Image (cartoon, rainbow, N blue to C red; front, side, top):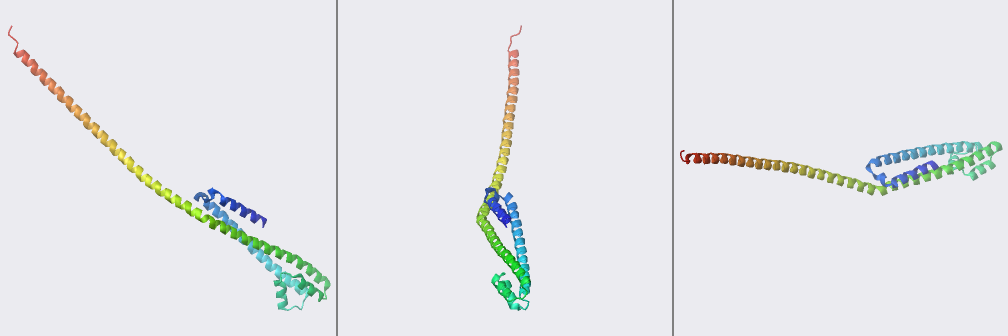
Length: 217
């Protein structure tokens, strides 16, 4: 029982840590919680089985003290949880003293064992209630974290859309810049060609005029 309490305390400490509500750690914490619950349930079943066996042994021991006991008397003796007064009264009325005294000692031991079992089962029941309370208390926190995670995911998706738009706009802007640059270069080239052609034409015309207007030698 002490071991179960220690495990429960460790689970409480783990669940009390901020990282316990992290979606990556939550599955492990819940798996640990389920394992502890299964172990507690198995322990309770074992204790219940032991209690039934003890009651059956008490029934047999009462028959040693009172072989002529009725079914109602046997039921009262076992439901009393090994009440020593019932067995002592039966012992006073019994003829087989040695067997009766031995049965009485066994009854006392079994009675103490049953008391411990009942106490352990009450503690286990309280332990399960505490674990349930912890889960209920942390449920809003977990839901809040999940909501924040979904909200963050939505923002990330929206951010990705904006980034894609920005990249597309940047590419379009660069493309337009190159187009404008190409147009400017083309205009400059055209201007240079025009200037060169004009300069060549003007220079030839000037040379012809000079040759035609010179006096004969």
